[in-house]
Structures are given as structure tokens and as C-alpha cells.
Length: 449
Image 1 (tube, rainbow, N blue to C red):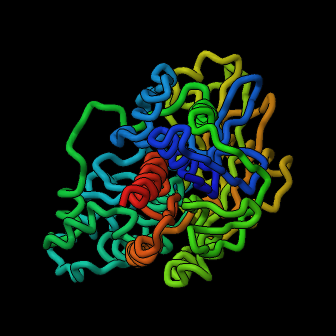
Image 2 (cartoon, helix red, strand yellow):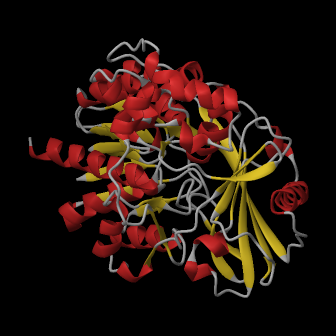
Image 3 (cartoon, rainbow, N blue to C red):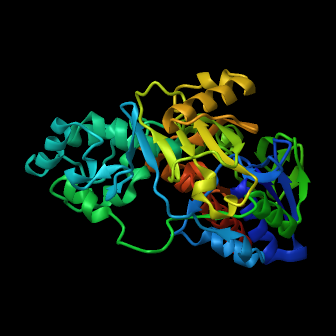
């Protein structure tokens, strides 16, 4: 059986790995990647002689996919967890503790917002349960529309958007409630009387388990292990195009004919490849927009007096250009022993790619200046690394779940074809890995039917 997987990000690598695990030597596997390296938007670079992730650096701990993969690949010792320090929010020219008891920054009660928003906003939150809630079960609106109407604009800009910006590189008005906060949508559908009640019901139960996990030597350890286990013919720096049906399967340029295809590609690329073979899915995928971002990793003198916090999120509307800082040497105990202090600065929000046009030197200078502002200390980098992610993150806009349903149902009607990727059921690394597994299972199921 000859299978072509298009896209060597985490979704495509997991799909390839799962196919090889089941089919073994019966599988002729081709992995096509348009970049000059594997990993997609996961990339481990080098900073001051040590590895540093310049894309995602953590995964949600309550999901099992990444720890399970590490275990399967004999990499259990690479699993690490954060120190437990809390982040700050920079708003109104000062730092505030990140509110507790919120769902993606949406409070269940006014007390959690005290000090971050003004008194009028606190009153609006406190009085929200007395106001009628108009929610259409099964419907979808932007997070901004829901939260601003119920709790006020300050909650959106100072609490919600700093968190959404980190996950999606988006804004609250570009992200839909149903796809980004499915638990909240479910409680609203179930008849919650108000937003405060809905948030309270949707909050996960208290737990002492780590919220996040990471990989000690960076995601490249996992990526390389998946590639080695999948053992594909790897065609990097190669653009797949012209997907067509044949009498026995598929043809894809430049790799030729195959029995099955997995498209683990960004939504616009998937739309182009599906345009002539599954036009309904292509049309839905083409409607998913992307946001760009950049990461600047700074190596500072090891004695730099960074705050005792895991990071600093920046509210929208501030004069700073960075949207967040991860104080990596504070957040991750395994980085604290290095000869330098590591800080990551993140840039980019949906609809504004202007900062990505800056040179590396300009981005490093901007990160340095903004970090000095939010910490109040001199910042003198020893060295730095810059990574741009153009179109790196899909936007889960209102109605996104319907688009995904259209894509998946249309593709399901076509034998020997599967899709995977961050635009389907979550942008996080575990969700991407799960989509790769699901794509492989679809191809395998089609082989036995």
C-alpha cells in the first residue's frame, strides 16, 4: 500500500507514525513537506548553546496525547512540568496578578477582576446575573460580543484577549465561543441563566495536577523520534499540487500515484489541493483565516533580576508592541540551571502583520525595550533568536465548527482521503496529534472495508 502524507508538522508526523505502526513493511510511505525542515510551526532552535522552542513550548497537561507519544517512543524522561509560578497581566501601565477562577479570562464572579478593571466594570459583573441572557442554543457569536455585552469591554481587553492572543494570535472578535470555549457553549446551550453561572459550571474541577507539560530538550526530540519511527521517503522543500482521482486511488504531483492521501496542511493549502476533487470541503477550508506571529528568544545574563512569575501577558490597547513574555527560566525548572536567563517575547495579532516586516535586529530591540518596560529592570541580551510564523495559526471564528463539519463530512464520502491539522479541532499540540491519529485511522479503516 502506498500512502502519501502531505505536511510534516506534528499532525502529519503522527499520522505517518500511526500508519507505519500498523502496516509495517507493507507500507510504502511518502512524506511531503514544502519547508526545508520537518515540524511545521513547531521548531526548536539554539540559544546560547542550548535548545529553545521558538514555536509552541508547552502543551495542555490534562490531555493524554503527548505524554502517551513520549512513552511509546521511549522518551518518558523528556517530560517536564512548569514551576507553578503564576503570570502577570500588564494593563494600564502596570502589572497585575493574573485573575484566578476564570475561563480563558472570563470571570465567574466580580471579585476575581478586582484591581484589573474599574469599579463600574466590577458592578456590571456583579449585577450580570440579574439581567436576562439571550443565547440561541446551538448558535455561535464571537467571544468579544458575548463578554463585552455581559461584563464590559475592559474584561475583554484586559483579561480575555491576553489569553486568546497567546493561544490563537487572535482577538476576541475573531474567535467564536463554540469552537474556542466548547464547555462554555455547552453550559449556555443547557440553559444557564446568565454568563456568570455558565462560566462557573464550565470551570474544570480543582486539581493539583500540572496544567501544562513540556519537553526538556525541545519539541525537536519528539519530531525526530516520530520521523525515525515512521521511516518515510521524506521529500522536503517540495510543494504538493494537482491532486486528482485515478481508477485505483490518487495522483499527486510531484510524487505520482498512491492508494491513499493524508492532507496535514494548513487550511488554505488544503483548500487548494481539494478544489477539484472535493469542492465542498475546499470551499469551507478556504473560509478559515490565518494569523501571523513572531517569537524573539532572549538570552540575558544569568543574574538578571526577573520577576518571580512565569510570564507577563499584555492587555490590548497598551502602548507596548509585544503581546506577551514568557519568563522561561522562571517557568521551567530545567531551564533555571543554564548559564543564561531565557525569556521569550511574542508578537502578532490577527489582522496586523506590521511587526513581522521588521528586521531581526529591530524585533530584538523592540522585545528588549518592551521587556524593560514591563519588568522595570535593565535588559541587556547576550544573544537572541528570532522566528517568524507567517499564517501560522488558524482563526476559530464564529461558525468554525460548521465549517469543520462540512470539511470532514465531505472528505468522509471520498475513499482513501483524510485531513488533519490545527484548523480542525484545536490549535494545541495535543489536538494536532489527535487529528493525525484520526486521519491514520480513517485510512486504515478504508483499507479493511
